[in-house]
Length: 623
Image (cartoon, rainbow, N blue to C red):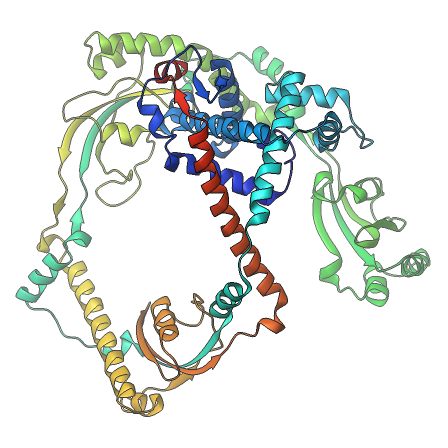
């Protein structure tokens, strides 16, 4: 995962195209080769180039390290396999190998000087002075899992790949008439006259008789059907559960407090005001006025034209303000004013309105939470042994209740839970273990127990499904009031939509929208100009219909509280000459699409030139 390790080489567009290309390999057939057995001791072979097991594992580890933050730091091996990450890594390595060979055969060589310059430009290998730092470079290699030679060779290959993909991208150029046509479609605007028919116009829709209610009940069966529920007994072996029986002495707490004192430090806070001046002369003038005893807020208004609200920075810690202002702001005495400080935004003068010194929270303040923390840490050290013991008991035929008695755990029950974690009243069930607890419960047969399963917090659970209540249509009598209310709401909605359709038909027959609306005591309005896909002015269905016709086109659509009729009043053609940036954006998008198409076609061709085989047994054994 070079892209995750260092600054991208080549253009961003080339990177995007190469990413699309990797995804396209599944279309060309690389996905298919996973179904057949390959030959040899390597994991895969692309033409004459072999991909070894260590290469796959190293790349896979880099890939997982890059993605782990997206999963809250809790992406484990089983999750990664379930999400198909091993195959994605293999496809990426194959795609890189194919293009590496193509670049080599085309004679795309990268000199040592270019590779060296590329590495030296990476901000992660620079020291405080902005120059190359050997220690930072070694740390980068360690994090990425590369040797120096491996890293240099990887950079060299990627630069060559980017040269190839960039040349293909540059060849993709959309014709001017196509660009202007697409721009015209996107930038054209319309204005519409409208009339709204609210549901509230049909307040009294009567009461449904039993036949109507029964028919409505069946018509909307999906909305009135209770989900499948399961009654569950489970054991939760978690650090918190084990911690309850772990004694922590006061001596241990005091030691933990001393060891972690830096964690209990509350940083210094300051309430600050600032004025920002446009130049040094204004800053000096403000400084002189403040030195003469003038009020900070009045000087800010007079010299910087900043009101009281504009000068208040609030109460902040040092890390919450720009780096250039940290030292001046946090060395001022309370009530003092700084000298002018220059930044990219102008000249700043700061005032320390109030100072709240930093402090370390006292032992008594955090004693209770620290006791839980120490106990849970010790519980984590025991949890593997306890989980093995629990697993042996369950595997030996012990019921959950018997296993609980021998391990000191408490069996927990849920009377009814659906697949979303809600009870029969539609409220979330409290205390459900994390991870795939619900998936496990809904994948276990009635009367059966699940295997002991790990959860993300380092704990485990085992569950038994006591009873399954199938999904079923709720009886009318159990929800009569809800059913009647829904019937009335839907009836009002149908009537407002029917009234809107009547008005639209009158417009299509030649009446003006104003006259058609007046027949029902309704008034018209006019929208602001809107484009295709713009749903701020009208519902999407109405916008789409109005752009399908010309002047006078009428359409109806439902709204959250009724229906609306709209008629095109004005068509505002696009003007490419007045929006060069907009035309350029369309040109760029089409060029990218053309370049992507060229890249995919080229990839299909070279994939046939460099046949790919994968030793599926060897690949599977890695994971």
